[in-house]
Image 1 (cartoon, helix red, strand yellow):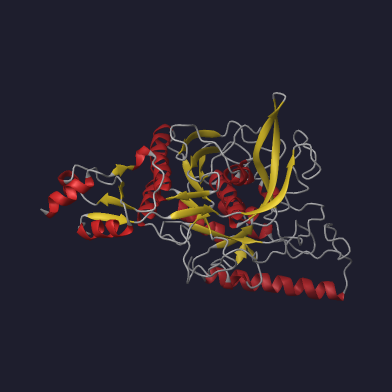
Image 2: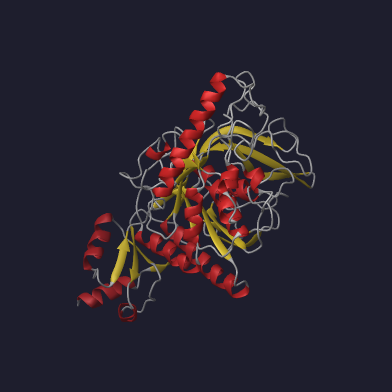
Length: 478
């Protein structure tokens, strides 16, 4: 009788491809083995939804399920990890500067390379990507799977990059971005350099998986649909391009754990998938004691990113975790492209500055793309380790992140290409930031201050600190 009762109940399940909006009272159920699936006329691995009239009905139904035969859980909510800033401009606005063909918005992209502006950032807080570009800018074999609110690829800096996509918010429609979050984070790593330049501006390809709605919110069922689409797309791409390499940009998360979502992400690892995830914006909460997912998910090479600020410290909103968050990357006052508009038949680009670990994630995604572009023989775990071993040391950061530092693109590319990573060290004698000392009256200049006893003392102290950090980092098992 019990088997019949469950079978009848299972007949009211809805498989996820129907794209039904998540309800308040429901249960997600997945048969674990072939015999269970056949017994109940289901498919192994497919996730089904049981919609209930009340919470107690769902609980009663769950009690009847055999835990050895079924996985089941309540739906989980997710959100994009961005803090909105009321600051946007068109391509011809005063902030960012006028868009000129071939010239990046370098006055605002402080996080990528040194810029002469009054942004208030300290020298050396950028990721030093300009020197990395002297070695590599991208590869057509690198595919970035963006799981977000969609991507508006009408912008000339994003046009032609998208090779596949799915919209789980609007059934059967091509993905669009009704929030701006997905477009903005994508531009940080992918913009081609017409009006804005991304970290990997050449040749990479993008797969668009929309599961966040216009309010920048999503749930388990939409996440699963996207992850299944990603799996199928990776399979198809690998058949056509045996050298294809897959990176996931995941600028989203939630406080509740979903075993089904984690399993779906683990399945992508069979293709060598490198997942980049955000630490969350819960005002410096420790993820070691209060997990945030998928940052804390047990996925091979999962790389969780916290946000650094303009002073090269932990951003006030960013979560951290000396055992669970791997490195910092810039996440404050980060400009990017957001959906623009047609005016008189012409597309007008729009840009917006945002804060968040969402903005930190694409910095790491872009550098991972550069690493794989210069050395495609590396595994996802190799790339993960290079990202951490190549950071710029940040005082006190060992209490925040595993690596004890902030992303450095140039050192990462040097390491991946077998060159001397010390070439990326930034000294008082030159370089693009780091330990260099600059006039306090003009913090944007990169001309060294005249040598004096205090300069020599500070330089020696800085170099000793960097040497001590490097020795400690090399002793770690990452």
